[in-house]
Image 1 (cartoon, rainbow, N blue to C red):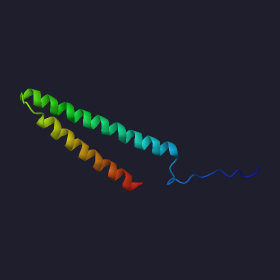
Image 2 (image 1 turned 60 degrees about the horizontal axis):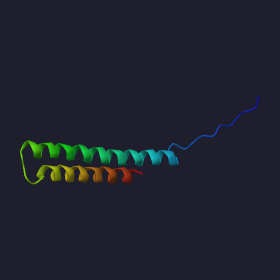
Image 3 (image 1 turned 90 degrees about the horizontal axis):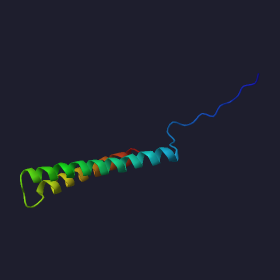
Image 4 (image 1 turned 135 degrees about the horizontal axis):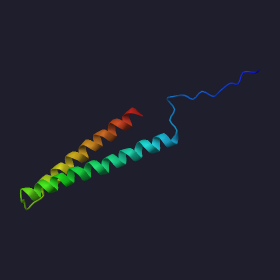
Length: 78
């Protein structure tokens, strides 16, 4: 019986599939977070019967800034 050397993969190397899944999940998080915060701001604007969508814009911008920070942290780690 001979030794059958197996390939050992480097855990630090990432495959193209890993990076694709990582960035597609970030895109989905971006869309869902901004959408949810925008919807909450819209509902609050309707509840308070405001003419100008103050909370829609505020919540949307806060969510966008938070997601940009999340993307920056994610890119910085790789």
